[in-house]
Length: 182
Length: 173
Image (tube, rainbow over all chains, first blue to last red):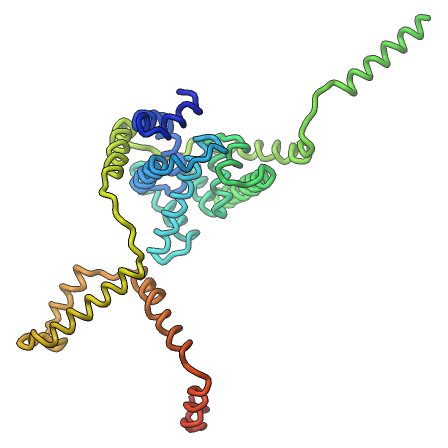
């Protein structure tokens, strides 16, 4: 991977922008895809949000102040795009966001691109019951294995608050799984 | 002598343990217990989430993104015009068209009565209204108009209106 400072410099230079952007897409496409997919659940929607995320990265790179890592900045854009997307969808379906997310995970059983077993499905249903912020923290910490410091940059939240969110999330998921299995 | 040497060694050992140079953040031990218990809980959760993509998705994705960004870059620059100006201009244009239609198109006999049900159905088919549209119209136009009209009613006019109306009819409402 090209050194980040140099990559950012190339992204901000119109002569080297396209070449540097290809490197960014190549390096981050899968990580961003899976991050978005865990929020919007459906593959086609994830594809749309991912395209928008990269277009925003491309168009707004000049506004990137470099006070965080490039990947944290892109994760933040992807997170905002995903949340905006599901909020709009929920509104369009005249549902509140919690009900909309429950509906999304209920449809997973019939999704050809979801091959999870029973416990994986229960875990997704449990995550969908959490408040939005706890969902994000849980997914980033548990599945993406990001450090609290990185999550703190992405969500602009203190590490202490993130830890508290994660502990609460795990506790709720554990309770949900126990109640569902018995 | 030997006893003194042994005591000195003990003192040194104790000092080394107390001042090892290692340190932790202030609140480390406060959250350690919760961290251990949380890790114990998550060890029972599945590590895979079950989401999949088609085999060639990621290989095709890159070129699709590059194409999209280059397309978005090629778009003709649009000069930003104040939205309010567009609304006023389109309102004037509509009024002018309406005036011309009324005055010069007297042969046309299209009225609401002359439209058939199928005409309405066709219009609804090609102009589907969504809840969001209705909300947007209510928020942007009607509600503002109502606010505007109330804001322009003088207190004296309200008093006149109330005086003119019979008290009983208000009470009955």
